[in-house]
Image (cartoon, one colour):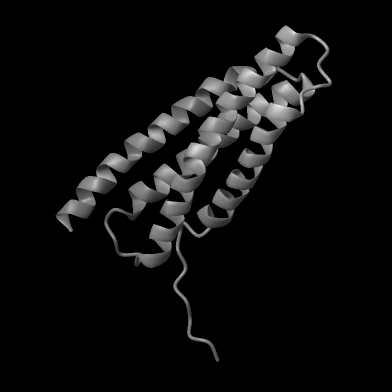
Length: 142
């Protein structure tokens, strides 16, 4: 019989980081090579610029989610800083989904009704970084 393994509230962050990394690299390639269906050069360049912004935010935050997931895997549930790491991970995941995901949706399908939520995604990413501040102080206090 295998020994019971402790589960982390951040175990979901590991596969999500892998998905974000995979999709981010794929979208980077698509932004560079796959926009030929757009006949208008100005439209194609605007789409490429938007996609590169979305890819950049996604690929910056995928390793952060990976690190948070790995940190959570190695920590016990009693750590005082857990709540801040969990909050940061949720905000990063939501921020990438809203910021990058909605840009992808608009560029690839033309569906722009949800585009006003893109800045909400950016704010969620910023809030995720802010959520790491208390975690850093709580870790220092031990």
